[in-house]
Structure formats: structure tokens, C-alpha cells
Amino acid sequence: MSGHSKWNNIKRKKEATDAAKGKIFTKIGREITVCVKEGGPDPASNAKLRDLIAKAKSNNVPNDNIERVIKKAAGEGDKNNYENIVYEGYGPNGVAVIVDCLTDNKNRTAGDVRHYFDKFGGNLGTSGCVSFMFSEKGILVLENTDLDEDQVMEDCFELDADDFTVEDDVIEVACAPSALRGLREGLTEKGYHVLSAEVMQIPSTYTMLEDEESIKKMNLLLEHLEENDDVQNVYHNWNMPEA
Image 1: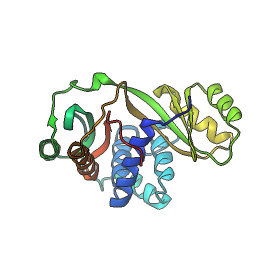
Image 2 (image 1 turned 60 degrees about the vertical axis):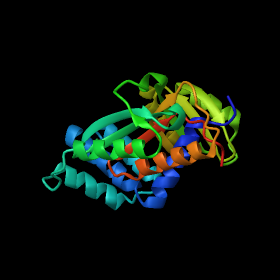
Image 3 (image 1 turned 180 degrees about the vertical axis):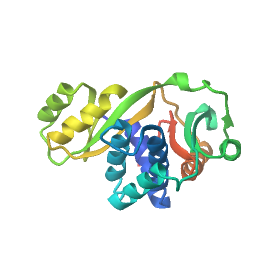
Image 4 (image 1 turned 90 degrees about the vertical axis):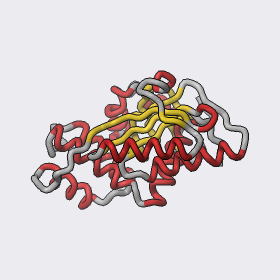
């Protein structure tokens, strides 16, 4: 169960790009807005909102900012109606890409996403063209501060984890999406520092890129997608080289 985790590689790249561009709270705030409008502003009765608050805090979003977005979404101050749209396509050399969006203007978002694929050596496909190559998994990341790996493993599997990966500074735990909330809450109660806990699209196979031009274009495609405010998550099956 040890070794390099490709899904965390994907996540780290996304976070590094978003952090550099100051995008993290724009994206989480949009998710919170939709969640509050659908399920109400009380995290005690809105389990998804509890998850998003935990996600925001793990990304160092101040409590005041979180509360402000919740109040705005619960009142009449936020007139934006966001719609979830998923785009699928291929990057250079057939790399499979899934783009998860929340948008208040479908035409703008579709035009932007299509432009990025066309510009950087890919093409936007139809719904279902690549999603069959991915499956949903709950991915939880723990800070590894000289933890007893055997004890962590025992605690994780007791809370319905499926897999366990140790890296230098983090421990990654995979589970069924339905088990993620209980896993996060259980490990938090046991005193672990949970860095992130998200349901992600994990590819079943990976694509290598050999030539520099394809690698450059794929990086540019990912960067442009992730910098777009309408794009919440980007998943792909590129076997990225380790930094």
C-alpha cells in the first residue's frame, strides 16, 4: 500500500496553482453558496455544509469569510444561481480530462473550456467519453508527524477505509465516498490532523506523455482550466512526472 500516489499528485498540483492565483476561496465559496441554497444555512442539519466548512478551514479560510458567505447565501443578498456542469475531453496524446464546473452562465463557461482544449492540443468531447475510465473515491490526507503507522492503519480500517498510503509528510487514506464523512470525523475525534477530505475522480489507467511539447501543452491546459473561476475541479489520467 505504499508508493507514489498519483491522485495526491493531481490534488497537490491543483492546490499549488489555486493558491498562487488566490482562487481557493472563490471556488469553495461558490460550493458553499449552492449548498446553503439547497440544504439551508445550519451545518447541524446540513451535513454537506459541515463538510464544506471543514474543507474551507483545511484551506486556511478565515471563519469570518465562511460565515459571511453562508449568511449571504441564506438571505437575499446573493442573486447568483450556480449550475453544476461536467465537461469531458482529451488533452494532448489522448489524456483523459474531466472538468467539474459551477457556473451562472453556461455559454460563457462552455466557450472558455472549449477554447482551452482547442488551444492546447486537445478536444472537448461528449458526456461520457472519458468518465468511464474514472471512479469516485473518498480521499483523505493526514499530516504525518512521526505517527505510528500501524496504529494509524488500525484506526483507519476500523473506520471503513479501503486503502492506506504513507509518504514523507502525509498519509493518504482511500475509502468509499459514502464512508468519507465518518472517516474524517472519526479520525479528527482520535486527534489526527486532517489536511483534506474530498470525493475525487480517480482514473483506472494512466497515460504517459513523452515529448516536451505535449507536456508543455498539457500543463498549460491544466493551468488555464484551474485558473477559471467557474471550474471547481479538474481530474485527468496523465501520469505526471514527480517534481
